Image (cartoon, rainbow, N blue to C red; front, side):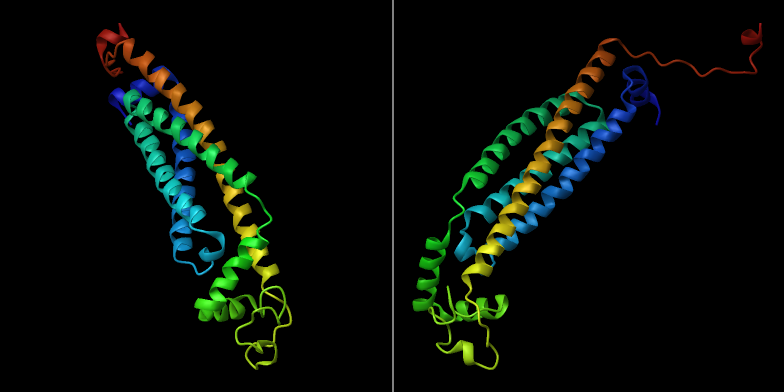
Length: 231
């Protein structure tokens, strides 16, 4: 590393801070990609009928935004540009606020979802029994609350390829709570990293601006063999 970039890092004392900032944004970008993949997968998951489209759609959008803003932060660190940092900080601040609101909505969302699941199961039982059949095989259960509660086939508890003695409500609720908890923990971890990255980005922008305003004068390298220097 040489020239103006080296001068900025030396004068502002921001070399290590810049590296840490890039690492944090790299981790955040990876988490954003994970959220994006999770959301897109959830949009085509058979279980979206029970959990709704809101959560996978929110994960997809937030994952895309987190990835974009994180890469912008990495570019700002590489370029050592306070204007990129200013744009990055503004977008990240807005994104953090949106994420906190979304996480609070998910966190405060009622956990008693039995009635919703019951209505969905009843609709599938009448119009799409193949989906129920798939869920029963996947979760190793029969019927909704019990093997005699709207099972597909009607005597699935006695069928050779079924024979499960528990209803599907409990494993469906367990799966939903697991996904909800995973999204919450990942979301709060990302927000924490972003707040730290935001503070570091603001400090880097301040240091670079101060270094640039101080002026840049390239110092010639010392020539050990020069008789004038020895004199």
